[in-house]
Amino acid sequence: MAIITGPNMGGKSTFMRQTALICLLAYCGSYTPAATVTLGPIDRIFTRIGAADDLTSGRSTFMVEMTETAQILHQATANSLVLLDEIGRGTSTYDGLALAWACAQHLAQQTNALTLFATHYFELTMLPDLCSNVSNLHLHAREHAGDIVFLYQVKEGPASQSYGIEVAKLAGLPDAVLSIARQRLSSFEQANLQPRQDDLFATPQLSDATDPEPESAKLVERLRRAEPNEMTPMQALALIHELHNAAAHLAD
Image (cartoon, rainbow, N blue to C red; front, top):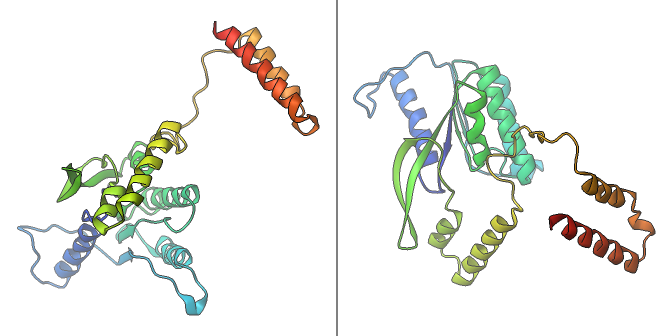
């Protein structure tokens, strides 16, 4: 499996489709756009690319995506070529990321299918640490004079960023909207509202200290015994001041 990252319009989907077409051409006995091609047995080609709903059947885009993914997970074998493009994007960030990770891990560990897995969830680039048969690839791009330049080069390793705002600028979003987006992105990063890409699936590390300091333990116990639903606003404010002053005293 290759986890493929990189900006939108960077060439991820094209790289995946050309791989499938080369396999198909080779198996048909046709010429392929390569100096040499070496292929093992390929029994089927499975794809989950693009986004489309099915309103007549009452199925959302996400439902269609999950249905097609389910068929791949049930039918793919170790000799199948599987192309998955941005699995999990139709739901919340955590749900989508968890589903994308689980699907990728199943294909790598259980099915062992020949898989190209394009994603914007950078957490998936940690999968090679868990599965030896998984690697990272990215489509190269650079920023130049405030714009993004797509180089359409496939390189080893994960991409450094998604360049989402830069691509939105190419799409013609108003400057005022882009300015707000950059401000919000900066505030999200500074406030750490979004989990770091390399620690969402990390195993929590236990502190070396076995017991907290006595004074700190008293503050924790004081806070634990507080009953927020039974406190007046003034009592809650007084408790905050009390804890704040005590914490400041410990810091000194």
